[in-house]
Image 1 (tube, rainbow, N blue to C red):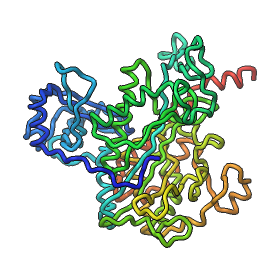
Image 2 (cartoon, helix red, strand yellow):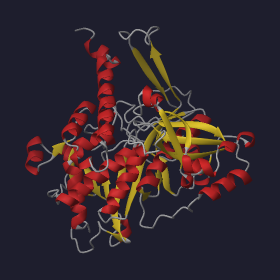
Image 3 (cartoon, rainbow, N blue to C red):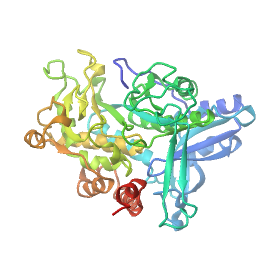
Image 4 (cartoon, helix red, strand yellow):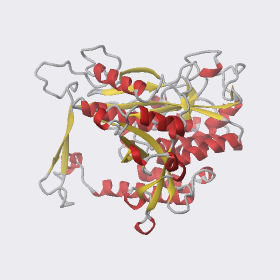
Length: 491
């Protein structure tokens, strides 16, 4: 569970003066400036610490060629500026004292005018938080449960001419000490398909990895964690749960989390991947996102007098907004062609648009671990996967929920049955719709259902995002897969 009933500890706010003092006193030699591209991939540039002073926090660091970053700029308008955010200061644990390095997340600005760049994903999260504040919700809390795989390696098996010749093919092999298909010379116990949830070591072979990853998150990045464990799938599926936080800090934490998981795995001779569905026949990786609205210290989703799940009418309207826009939200929450290999029946991933308490077959669940505790009341949106850009995904979900509150969208009755086992006629009777079946389909829904985003998301961002994602779909569709050869080569 990603959220507990307690209040999250507030991190000590770092100021420009305090971080500059730490850089000096701790002998930090390098500064890593980090941000994500439009699709959520982490980017960075490293500068000497002597190049970062109070003036750079005012005017920014002019080192960014926006034309080389996916989704940013054309070549004739490429000069951009990065403003370090002192609250995101952290000393990276990967480097020795001779190359001691600290990181900042940056906000991206236009060169010259120093206007905020409208395709900076972090800016969208900041705008969404401000938009919620304008609606009277001064705080929103977010708690993603991030699943991922840790493999011993991936062997790509291309034909000799696969890169240059688009007509040739490729295959891959997943290498994992836990996998039932792997010959480990009797050194490891295999985890059978769908039997990876909570086995004790030595069956769970990644305890040391997760311990070390958690240590880094806590000691180097100041995060508060709730738990870590092996997940359901074989071949190294893991989950580490962070304590919930406000929208922008939590989106920052998701980016940091993915960075740390990959770096720790790399240092230990493995690789971590947030690809949603790498293994056929077993569970995929999701990112269930817990969320709640607060105003002046009061949880606006909580009503102790509600007989069903102690949720308020505001919460019901918020659910209605998420349900109404669920198909177009998939463009952000499930942003890869591989995402739709996960959204199929039988693997605990949501396929149907419905809400319920406790029910994990619905894409919106009201957790019921506690009763009568205001701080614990929230909704869990189960659709997203960990490949998403968290800044855009959180912002889009918030816009959808607030649209439901504004328009008083009725979510209908909860469905307290296993949706996977309902007949098509029964689902129709209940008014249950399905999520999109492909990335192309989700983008098409976004193209016709985007007005709820307009207050936060500029048109140029939406158009560029749609362009990039439709090209991803096209490039995947153009190429035959290994299974297609298996299925059709005797046609």
